[in-house]
Length: 295
Image 1 (cartoon, rainbow, N blue to C red):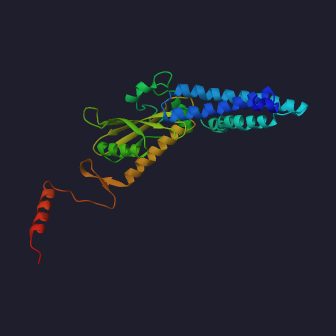
Image 2: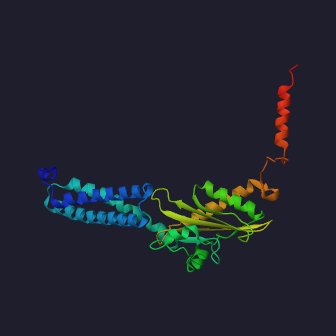
Image 3: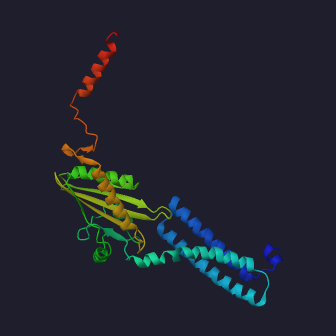
């Protein structure tokens, strides 16, 4: 005989609590498996939706149970409370982002160059159906221009090679996984490309990033594109990432001064050029000093 039967709890009360707890376990397990063990995002989204549906069903059963207890009395109130706490907590999560979703445009792909956005190459294979397409949706350009007019190309007075190196450092500092490095060269028209993957901290959603650095010997233009791999709404994630990258690149630019031949020199710590063979000469001088008798 189970504890529930001893207590005489109504079947609805028992099942409402069980469904709520099952939805909680399902949601927690899905997040862990997706974030750390490689569960595919479409499967993860289906399991999350299932947990939300389970929580909603549990809430409905909990309400029916509470009404019956209120009218006729009897046990089951504790289980109803557990149902409302667990299932309510699960549903509070998606409901809490509704105001944010309504305050932002429905975008999942943003760029500093809507007219000619950087294209995905290596990451294009990861963006096949059911993922979002690799091509930038042209309809996003007008929406982005109205919502985020500050997103614009970054023009710098540095050589394209130096700018590319600074951009690569900024990307790595954000702990993104770089999947493609194409330094600027004569073969690619002095256009460098960096592709990287970033993941959200808690849920582990994949976002794809591509940066393009084009220019010449004295100036360069930097364009960034950030796109969610899944989902219609990014809740402002991509525009935030682009702004963070732009700030990081500007900080790197401000902390260095242009160097000859595309070399970077840190501000406040000028270094003299080292001639070929100077290291060997210094080593010989040190050996002579060691061999010389001490007074």
